[in-house]
Figure 1 (cartoon, one colour):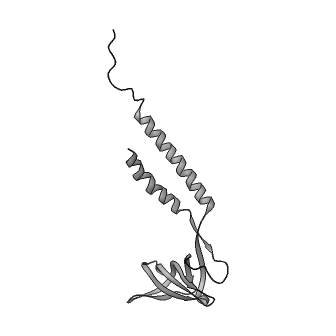
Figure 2 (spheres, one colour; figure 1 turned 30 degrees about the vertical axis):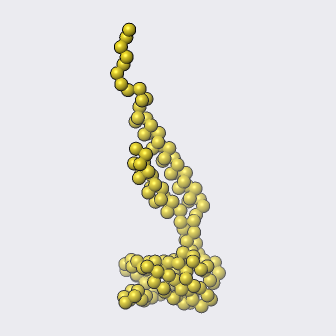
Amino acid sequence: MKKRLRRVILPGLAVVLSACVTYARVEGPVPLRNAEVVVTPKTPVDVLLGEITVHDVTRMEGRVAYADGDSVVLAARRFVTAVGTDYPSAGSPVTIVQDQIATLRRKRVSGWRTGLALGASGAALAAIVTSVGSLAGSGGGGRPKPQP
């Protein structure tokens, strides 16, 4: 029974906690190295993925490999095109000129969302444990003893 609860609760908790991540606008001209970011260019751009060119990219997600006042080099994890096609990437380097960036947002953990998610998860866990305990019964079972 405990293994079954773990199979249900742990993935569920991971899903709930993943909702605790938000993206905040990067303050200042240069994002920190290794920061997880989402970049939206001013106009759709073409991105080279190995031997394939992805046209009309409107959103790029990944980790900042290098940044200065002129450009940001992104180790990209994902590209989204103007028509909504999603292209995964395994860290393909993409250089984006600062003048070409419309928005640059950094991934961060939201305190209030995390607290809300943990509270809801705790309440759900308590409800599950309580319902499982009531299903188990008193544990007395068996035949009654004969009267002397």
